[in-house]
Length: 164
Image (tube, rainbow, N blue to C red; front, side, top):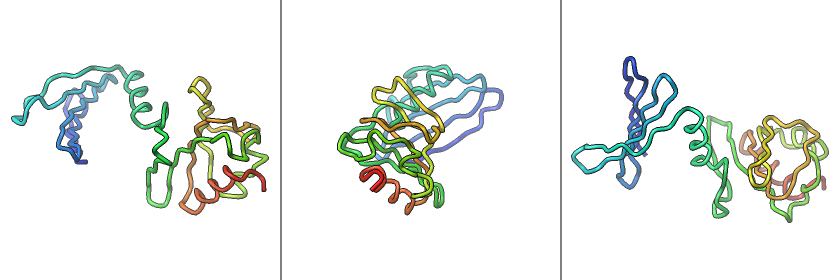
């Protein structure tokens, strides 16, 4: 994927995104928070407007595209690598021994070194940002966890095996 950024004085910033498949999408982020999206209509660089979003709508779309609202089961995990820091998404499967245990009971931080950034309960109705040690893990919850690769591995083991 190729991304080009262009500053638009008095307007905001334009992002031109070319996918590996050759499709081109333009996203204009206005200083007032609006986003406009354009798709390449033909290979002569003619672009047609696709949709326009306000700031809240754009953030919701980003969470959907980024896997915060729904993660396809085919994807075991999603990584975002920032030097040694990795942010991964984990679905709490019904067979995991951590189901019904709190973050504190599992000793997540002490045993793995990883940090649970957020927990989204099944269906997305309840979200816990920076959850405390008392939060109990439930089936199908989505956990967003930060840590180095070895910490992520240790966290996966805790998630699957519980307090063993």
